[in-house]
Image (tube, one colour):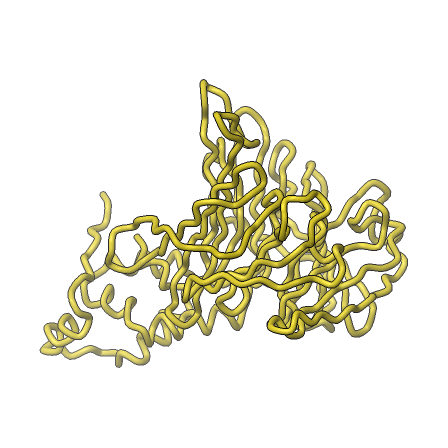
Length: 390
């Protein structure tokens, strides 16, 4: 028998006054403190207990407390996509190491859920929400590549988060012949019905919309070209999630916007990292990589940093390729493979200050049968605000 779901459309204060005639054995502040320590799945179940409890779980002081607790213990999110006739995605997470001095060599992954993933592709994960694109099916055929009609076009989506208004927004663009057209925004949550809104963009965007994008302090960044030439000037598009306005940053070197360069959050600043090896990823003989950090977006100023890697042959097997995932709050670059084949799965942490590297085995993923594409996201935090979306 399913538990009843209580409507919390009423004002929380009204519900609290209605229940004030009953003496609560535990003060509200203490209830909030206790509930903020529960995982998000348990919080969702608690909403079904009573209107009183449901009203507490949407109070700003509770959601703020829950988010602060979650941010203090960030997670690494793994989305493992099985690739066969019946595609499935499995989601796991592990605690994200916060102390570079930790000597932990093994972490057990927590399983969250699985769901069919046919004709879908994973875009990004921001503040507890994951953005997934659905690929259209024409004449019974999946078309993850550009769809040919009278014009060659495809749609690309990006997920952003405004920490001021505490809103997630999805930005979608239709690309026609390598040029971005028809910009639309969808705001998640709130009381209004979900609907796409067209917005204006005065910045021409060309090139193929790649997978690398990141949202930092309410600004969504992704790579583009300033003109339609294949050797056109590379730029970083900046989309302010709150104002829904576009801007851009020029790059000094094209390597910053190279398709293989990963955009990361480096201490609250946008950065682009890329390997110095010919194949532009990290493997057992790679000796160095470079990172470009955006110092001033208005002046288009970047700083370049080169980092020397220790010998990787004792960590990485020949033929194993590692990719940049991001930077932790402890100034560690995170690298990991994108494929899983019934073998041990490792995450690598390179200390930017000390130039050392450590390897952590993620146990639990090896139980998956078959070959998988692994998407890894850092600084994953659960946000109780997203429960208002459902």
